[in-house]
Length: 256
Image 1 (tube, rainbow, N blue to C red):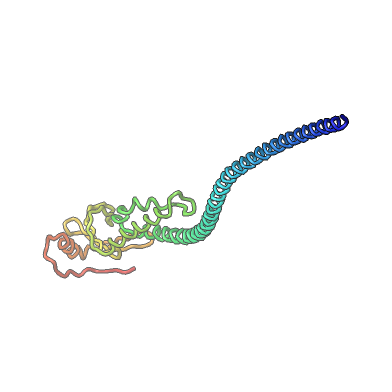
Image 2: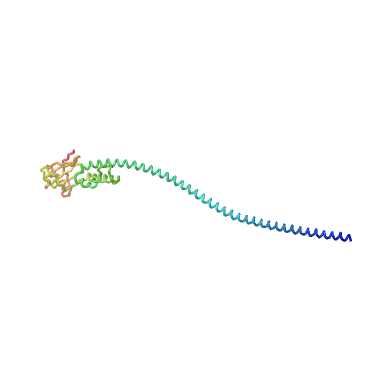
């Protein structure tokens, strides 16, 4: 009986131990399962973070590449702007030098035209009446005060050149004009004047009975009678008008 009780007690103890072992094993499995689940969740989170980081890294790299491209573009534009500024400064320096040269040239030309205008005014006093009338439109444009005029430098030169050109053409030719001439007797007669350039002139009238000679002076043209050569002067005029055949006709000349 005693043995039976001992065996029964051992069986009960064994059952208790087996129950405790089974409970401990089940708790260990649950713990392992929970740890595994957390590990899987952690791995999934890590994978998700890696994927998001890869996408973010790619986006950041694209932004970096774009910003780098913009930086290079700005650098290129800055270099171009610096080169443009340098070229502009160079061009500005050239323009300043050119402007200074043009100003100096303008001052020189102004001095020249003032001198020319003064000489032309003196020359006008020595021109015969027909030529003076011809250049009068240009002569009237000559400024009274060369230092106070609204005329451009180019126009002033044109006036001077126009007058000198007309004077040169007149001086190279023999010209005939009808004029009114004051006679020594106080009367005024219509005569035919023949100008041999700007050095000598003759006139004849009243059918070749009166004549005179003229030459320039600072006070204008001076005329004096020369009735003794009226026939020869009249003949010369007729030849110029193609009314007579050309021939040699001697005429008196006086040089002042």
